[in-house]
Image 1 (cartoon, one colour):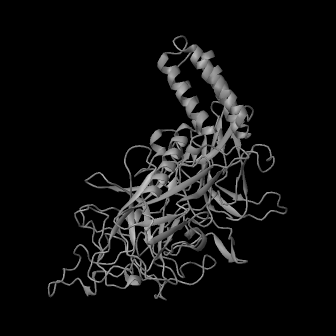
Image 2 (cartoon, helix red, strand yellow):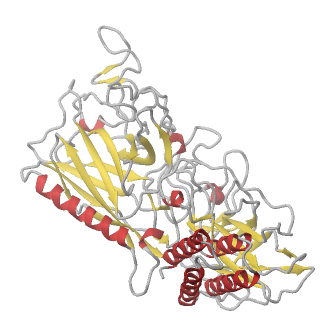
Image 3 (cartoon, helix red, strand yellow):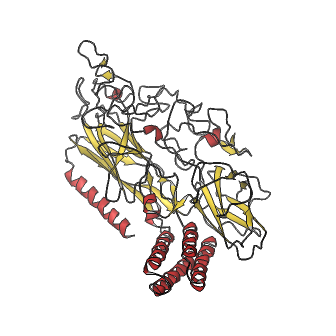
Length: 605
């Protein structure tokens, strides 16, 4: 909570300073908005948040850039009141951390756009025909105006004012710096501090013509929702974003602070009624908490793997299948499938096999159709660094769930089903609304999807399921029956949480290798601590006493009794403190206390 307050004060101070530094005579005004902010999962460490959109107008005294001149450049920075945990796609030789966050100008690759009835092609800075080889380094491009403001960001390659970069008659050669009219720019994560800011450096900003508008969309933002704490009714924590613009062009931003997400529990043990005996019931906290990896799980991919839904009643319904299609491009700015329907955000990694669907957007996901005249996100490395924008927006997996079975008798094993259906609470008779499938996974519940071949769990006694389809408009539940083979079910405790789960500090920061989505370890953290205590080879009574408290934590989390779990953790910390230097070494006691305090923070104790 201290960190959150510090971030909030910094954000407020930044906005006040920005207001004081903006000239009152500024002729360009940009209004910030976000549409409808999504609901984020409270234990999510990298939750996709709403796009921030700036709609800009210019006064009569601020005309567009005259032909032949460089479009003035500005820096646009977005600050969050939590850590910006988006993917780092590349690190340049100069130490710049390139982010998956994108800034799009004038809504490229949309069905209708200004004078372009067939859509404005997408062209990212650094792609062929828009090199980023200038002295400002990779990720920064220049645009030479042709004097027509509506064409400044039209996505054409190798343009130079009213000419073409062809190397003839004194014109620049093809793919020279300042050639092209890119409309997509990659952000950079500011190193150091709280990592709560993303900056877009040297973005050309051409004022719109009188009575026209210029749209700037910032997409692919992810945030550490867990840092802001779980919701404690009646309060609802919010992820907030503040926008700043600096440069030689004076721009006023109205409504510069916007909510980009509201935080709720996405998994509520005990929230959908009592399950049958020897059954774990997973209950969705809000209707869009459980999401597929990509749009392809609705409509299928481009290599003949079907999705798991069929069009029905204005949207889609579960088709009764459990396919695992490849990703397809989610490349229409502002399309509602990106936040709330899939774990992925804005992505377009290649033309094939992960290219756009047809039609695009798919049936029931939007109006109109984009002919995909643009170019996939790609860096040619003109500036010495391949900034890897083709990785932007893509999630690693769909929503996953980890079930940890504790107290399993020696020599016994746990069996669970390979496939589990989802249902609406209170249904009767019940028609499946979705499906999840058992996957092989690492100790944290991560790793690539690989359908499990056996119903018998390994030595870890952890089952990990990945969601392959869910109804995005309704709360659902899933019952996972289990069988104990070779022993009794008495004394077995089953914890449940999102996966993969982590307790290390690096998982709470932006990362090149971090799993998307990823979550704070809750019951998994308690189970991990139990294993650490067992491995310390303490006196039997000490191990039994400490693990008994952790079993209470697991049982309370499973029953959604967070107050009880917090009380048990406090008791554990007290016992470890009392035994420090006695039955526990100081180092052992500090390890137990540190991990228990991390769990307290994650539970909001």
